[in-house]
Image (tube, rainbow, N blue to C red; front, top):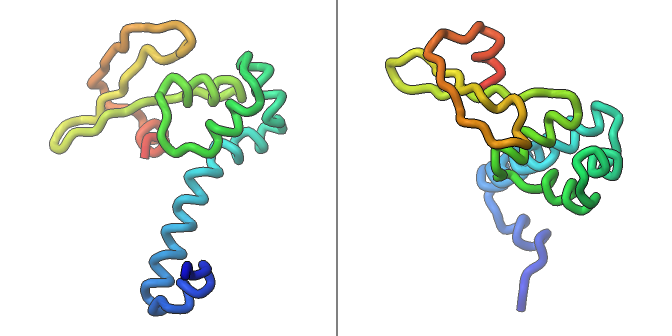
Length: 126
């Protein structure tokens, strides 16, 4: 017979239960990030969907997924008034800021810059 979640949790050691709860919290933060951004800008899913020209269900799905295309994330962030900065980091090398994503709705060839980003850019990329 199948066990309930409460029964499964009761069988875990306190250390294991703490690790499980920590992972649950991580996943919840990942899934809430876009929703929190949207709400912080006073938009409903329907309002944001109208701005992007999609159905409300598309916004709901985007808010609950943790892996998406950069263009999708960029369009979402741009619709609420933000921008995306992409920085590639390589061991022993200066960070490389990848530009060319200012208008993600139209494909552009990315441009690369090896100039050091300012501290704000580096912190935002982490």
